[in-house]
Structure formats: C-alpha cells, structure tokens
Length: 230
Image (cartoon, rainbow, N blue to C red; front, side, top):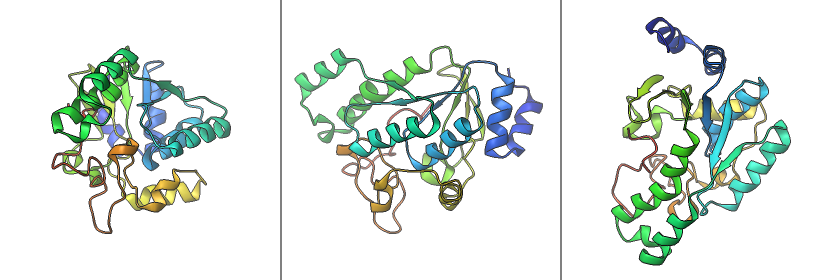
C-alpha cells in the first residue's frame, strides 16, 4: 500500500524519480501501458534507460498505423528489452465484424465504444491482472476529462493505483525531453497527428485544435475509448 506520506512525496518528485520511487516501493506488479505516443516514449525511455523493474506492454488493436509497428521494432532494438504485446480476442473481433461490419464504428457512438471495448479495454484488463500500480502517459492538457486527474489515484474499478508521472507536463516539456534524450517517436506527429490511435479513427488536427480533436473525429463525444474513464 501507498501511505499518505508516500503519496505526498510522490507528488513532489520528478517523473524519473517518481518512477524509481514506485518501482522501489513495489518489488513486483508495477506495469506501464504504452500506446507509443510521444508521452509514452518519454516514460519508456526513463524505464528502460534506468533498467527499472517495470513491465512495459502495448495493445495491438489490429487497426494501428504501420508507423506503430515500426517504432515498436525500433524500441526493442534500441533498449534490448521487448515490450509485451496484447491482442484482442479473435472470436470477439470476428463476431463484431461479421454482425456489424468492418467499419461499424463510424455508424454510432455505441458501435465505436463496443469496438474500443473489444480491441482495447478487454486486452488491457488482461494485461492489468495482478498489477498493483498502472503507470500511464496521461497529461492534463490533453482533454477536459484529464484536466483534474491527480498524479496518483486509486482505481476502484480495477483495484490498483494509477500513477500519472507526466500529468502536469506541458506538450513542450515532452518535446524537449524527446529532443534532449534523442528519443525516437512516430513520424505521424510531424504531420499533425498529435494524439494517435487506430488508423481509421485518427486524423491530423488543425493549428489551435485540442490535441484529441483528431480522435473519433466524426463524432461529438468526450474523446475517450474507455481505458481512462473510471
């Protein structure tokens, strides 16, 4: 367990020191989910460069950009540590596609959320089994839903701590780290894709748009897939 004193200490630490603190506090059960976005590349670099005992995994939805796979391969080569990959259940995908259509997520918010649940949420739940701390790359700037998220929170739904080491970082902070540490990122970011999800569900954003405006661009919603709404 994390005491109130530990939680207060964690809030004052840098992302790197915070990740070290968490990994020392828990000998096992600390995991990090990366979508291979810029924030997640920062955390991946901190974890692997410091050889922290934190399990790093990603979700392959089956609808990602080619650039995701290329960057995953480059990460594995650079750090000499493989990121674990979780896939959706094939029978769930087959049932959804055969009953509703390959691109049914365009037809309604309900269909889109069901697709996200099958391809993201269920695999994530498997990846988080027995986890004690779930590390994320969330930042408060990214969306209204994330504005008031704390550095550390208790996820009642999943019965674990959720640690957001970059929650108070600005986008410029992220870019500065990537440049200073020579960390590679998705080429898509330079083409206006700031928040990158599945290929058919992501578009480039216009100058001044919210970073997540390009996600599920055809609908008016909170721009969340269900991973971080509890």
